Image 1 (tube, rainbow, N blue to C red):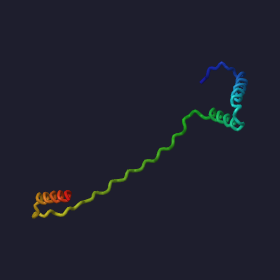
Image 2: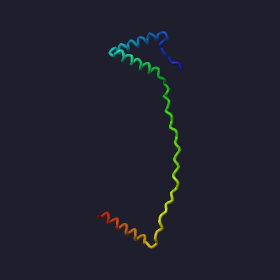
Image 3: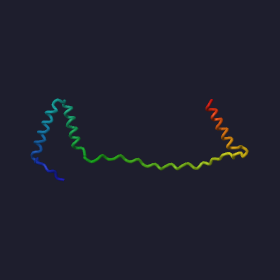
Image 4: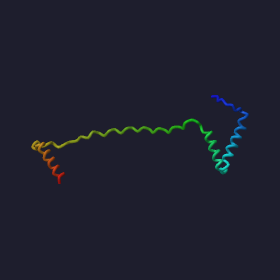
Length: 101
């Protein structure tokens, strides 16, 4: 991919040196170490590839746990001599008495 530029190849080093000198003049308030750190960050930024970073690996899927085996529930046989509706009424009345107490 060609990029159109009005700067010739011969002008590039001189313009780069002039730009660096102007930037260094602005950075004069910084210490030498801070200026070196600035230029190191600029070089790192320009040398960093434009590609997106590699995506992290996806976790491996875990096999689902099989449901537990069916459990058989056995209830005791209901005694036919007990009147179930009457027992339910007595239970409800007893519960009401407990709440009132």
